[in-house]
Image (cartoon, rainbow, N blue to C red; front, side):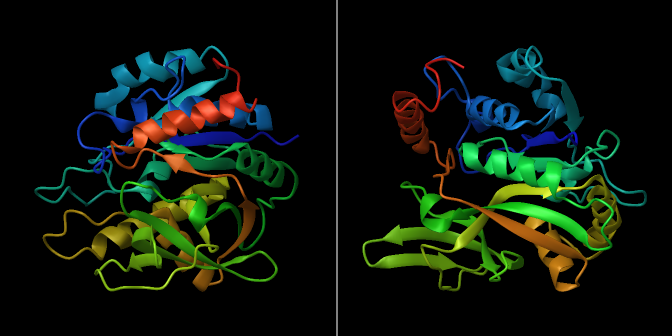
Length: 305
């Protein structure tokens, strides 16, 4: 069977979490962090190795909290997402502190990936189903030689991905009848209130969303060739930045959306009914720990991984 890798993006600073490194917060009864559950589910689904994308300044803490433990159960590599890792001729704008987003995170694995890979966020719990579906698609159906990039995506139902403690940002999807992704729109401040769903665009204007729509939670099944595409697109993105812009990010949903519109990619949406949860806000930590407890009680996970 075809080899597959799991790429975990763990370099984000966690801007909404308020101090502390949210990716390393324990949520399980044995001190497990959210990543432990994702890795457990990925290995169970058949993934062969793990690549952690981290920042060098977090390396020591990261290896102590999770890396060294995972190295005992699976082959592990580390890639480093750094603010200064830019194409020749480009420099970091004065005042910019955060790395360049999920596109740059995946670009950091360019010298170590030779097989199809699933990319996920470090601080999201996805459920078991999405790992199995994406693994099986990549191992059995993905055409790495196709003239149009063959990509797959875990499709989560919007109402299964909300936080009780504030608005969330999601890539809201339009999906064709044949299950292919037509469009993904980054949508902000999504909340469910007593009288319905609320959301805005990036400028704060109200937009309409439905509770049953699919959203992308950054679970993308990609080919090694896609990384070359990211490499080509990064200088274009940097050249398009306005002077003084120190916040814009090179983001996978926007990159893939552009490729769909230019007919250079076909994305198969693999739907899941599992409930997502994650630590967007500090107050989410307790509800995540309770959700993990419920999953242990219902037999999904052992008491200690």
